[in-house]
Amino acid sequence: MFNFMKKWTNSEQLNETITIEQIKQHEIPKHIAIIMDGNGRWAKKRSLPRMAGHHEGMKVVRKITKLANELEVKALTLYAFSTENWKRPKTEVDYLMKLPEQFLSTFLPELIEENVRVQIVGDSSKLPNHTLQAVQKAMKETEQNTGLILNFALNYGSRAEIIHAVQQIAQEYKEDAISLDQINEDYFSDKLMTKGLEDPDLLIRTSGEIRLSNFLLWQLAYTEFWFTDVLWPDFNEQHFLTAIHDYQQRGRRFGGI
Ligand code: IPE
Ligand code: IPE
Ligand code: MG
Image 1 (spheres, rainbow, N blue to C red):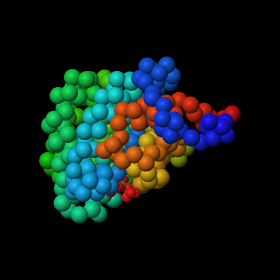
Image 2: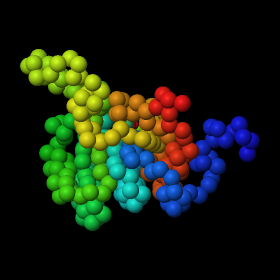
Image 3: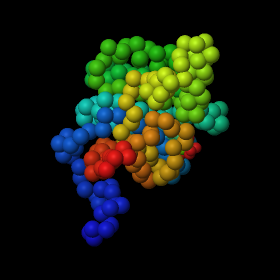
Image 4: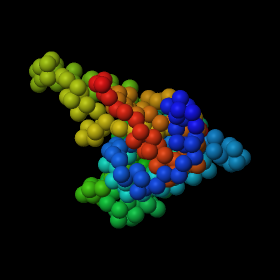
């Protein structure tokens, strides 16, 4: 391998096998965010309905959650449904809204056992009752857990989140509860739905799309990005370890030298 190629060739293409032990020797990203994309294309390739791809994708959520917890990642934020995903056919939206229940009815005992804490970000007021109830039950039953925070972005849109934060701050200012110079980056961050979570260190997007699709626009300001053509239902532990391995090779400067 020529040296100049190494710069932009990631280990996925180098076909190295990365082990958990190897990864644990270096800094593990504290917060990992994932845009789980490509379920529909995975199904299409197999002439299956799109729902089959979503179902398969759910199993990957389980695998990656387990591994993240084992690696002692503090938070894993998974983009499960965007504010724009309501544009999809009703049958698909209905199916996607049943997935949290399906996932939790199977895996909640396991999450409890593994000390995982379930949380959500997004506008939950628009979720069907059955979806919200399943998620709230999981949040309640895991609220004392101290391991990985498994944070589902459900009906999440970053622009809506930012507007909501601005409205809250404007209201406080109007009521003379705060002064202008109190409004700083920390104050603003605390008005976002990710309050209490550190900004992601690593963002992964599957399926070959190179965009953010309205995900965590404020929070990703200094995040390392890792894109792969692998479709979400095909994403596995080795891909996850490779993403972290690549992250560990990067020099984060935050504007410094
Ligand atoms: C990601 O897969 C899951 C959601 C957006 C809910 P897609 O359903 O977007 O799959 P593609 O992008 O059509 O392949
Ligand atoms: C982003 O994927 C949202 C989720 C993964 C939940 P989309 O498939 O909705 O994104 P676009 O439409 O390709 O940008
Ligand atoms: Mg998609």
